[in-house]
Image (cartoon, rainbow, N blue to C red; front, side):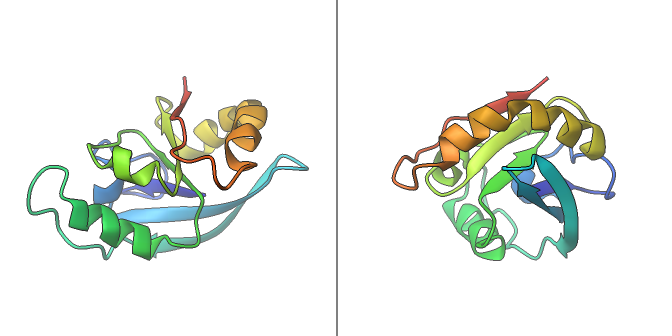
Length: 127
């Protein structure tokens, strides 16, 4: 799972793919435990225009081993992202607090991820 941030504490208020960095977490869905793994600098290409498909492709390549994207805002590329990644939009700005709330949505996440042929995934929201 990757969270889009600009400061390692709160979600970026910009679109997920425009975050300065991505915090990567492992979510053991059986035990419902979330552990920080690493931080990745966002080296994806700059968006030439709003909803640039090359931007979506660049972010997807950078985070190719991730299955869940969590952000405060998702842009028009969410339609492309939903084909490969489960998007989660959080209205809780602090990443740690948001992930605590996300644990309560474990069943929804499992339901979405259990069938790899199911995409496009539905957007899950954390309030």
